[in-house]
Length: 88
Image (tube, rainbow, N blue to C red; front, side):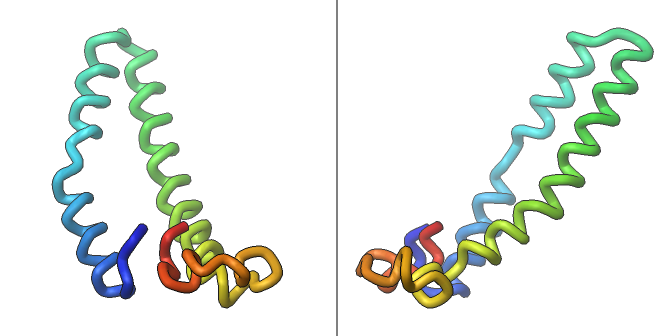
C-alpha cells in the first residue's frame, strides 16, 4: 500500500498475516454447515482455493508493482504512483 520501501511493505504484510485468523473461522463454519461426504468436498475446495491464491496473488502483485516505471503511458503522469511504487 502506502509503504515508501519494499522492506516496510514486507514487514507490514508479515504483521498483517500473523494476525489473520479467518481460516479458523472458515473451517469451523464448513464443519458445522456440511455433513459427511459434502464436508470432505468442501475442505478439498478450500485447499484448492488457497493453492490457487498462492500462485495468482504473487504474480498479480509482481505485475502491479512500480506501475509508473513499468507502465508509463498509463501511470507515469500520476505523481501518486511515482511516490508510492507499491500502492497497487
